[in-house]
Amino acid sequence: MPDTLSESKNRTEEAKEKYYSFQIKAWTNFDPMDKSLAKIAEEIEQGGGFLTLVEVLKVEDDLARIGDEEARECFANISAAKRLLRNIHELPKVLLDDLRQALKTEEEVTPRKIPTRAGTSPTSGESRVKNWP
Image (cartoon, rainbow, N blue to C red; front, side, top):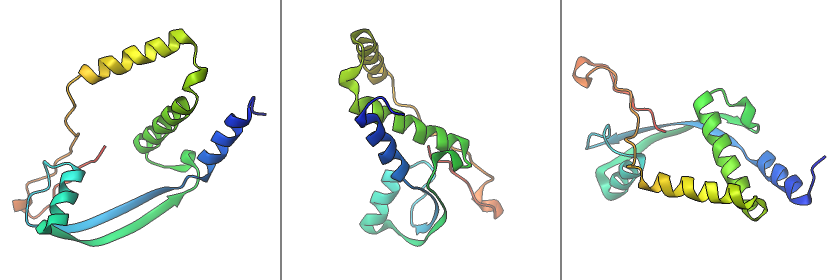
């Protein structure tokens, strides 16, 4: 049984969340391979392309049922961070100081490049694939 009412509420809110696996197909008049998803969307909004399909492949009500380990771990980290933010006032001072120091250090780190996996050249008739974080 949860120790507090807020813990029970937090678990209930997390249980209501749904997770969607989807696929987007689009045509653009620019090479999207070295652009962020935000930049691609911006260029499409400005007339540089259009979506031809947005298809939901799978919906999960439970984080544990997501088959993609990397996606599941990312969602779990986001969920933990949200819980931490909701309850930050309950953290011991030493832990709060450690968290502040870790965040300060992270801000000083140069942003990492988006990981990509490139297939064969599009001139060979095969497509390139980009994995989004």
